[in-house]
Image 1 (spheres, rainbow, N blue to C red):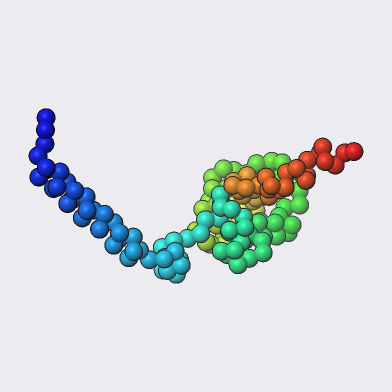
Image 2 (cartoon, rainbow, N blue to C red):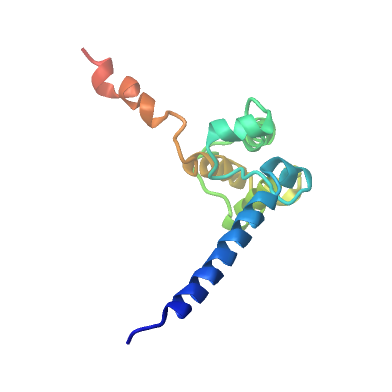
Length: 149
């Protein structure tokens, strides 16, 4: 089957129109900053690089950790606060609120009665960091083999 050169020119012409459309579309896209200002784009809290998150939020400590630790120090000094798990649905509610850039009211009865869900949320935050708190680059400095003579 041999196709005529006219068919190839038609395909090439359509391909050129698509490329032109994609270029104009990409140039007309709003910047990340404009999307944030309009409320269309939100910064993730969980699963986001810690340094990037702090830079974007302008905080020294992630708000999720600050809120949870203050709450635990005030209401949750109980044995096993970080050992026992909270109710999964409560943990997910808290996560969703922090991810939607809201600071949840941790003094609600549901959270005071399930104090372990707040501790579990802290553990979840650290577990989902793409780069651990003690980063891969610093691992050798913290390894046991470097401490012992």
